[in-house]
Image (cartoon, rainbow, N blue to C red; front, side, top):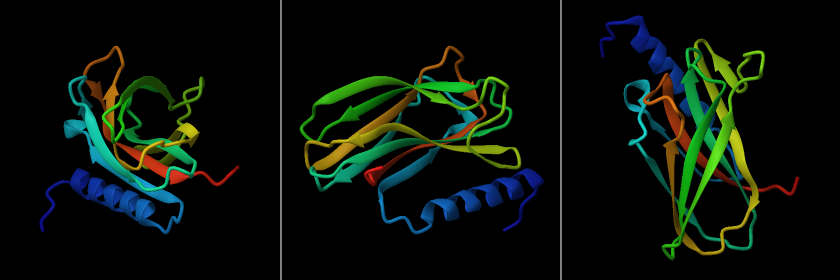
Length: 163
């Protein structure tokens, strides 16, 4: 495999590092998946789908949005629309703000070179009332369209630990 540009090498190393981080042993994780944003440009029409299987309705869960962007991302937050479809077909929609930086402009999250990774809790102690496959969809809901410098977005569902 021949890499023609240092950018490809850097991106390959960054993706590999992020993958190792996500694959690390985590007994509370029920579901986690991240999807690339084409050309680092997230358009309103690019609704990102995920499907998670829930097998225990007695547990409580924490739900996170994972996000990676470059340090050239132009905003201190990101508003998204989160659509949830239950196994029965019932649908919920909610608008969620993802805070990404302090008022002083310092990024929250983990930094690796020019990349910033976030795992933002959007619901703690959630109850999934039905056993089966839940479909989550994330749509960017910012004034700016397309939203530049966003690398990937994901969903994580884990068992709440009773904190």
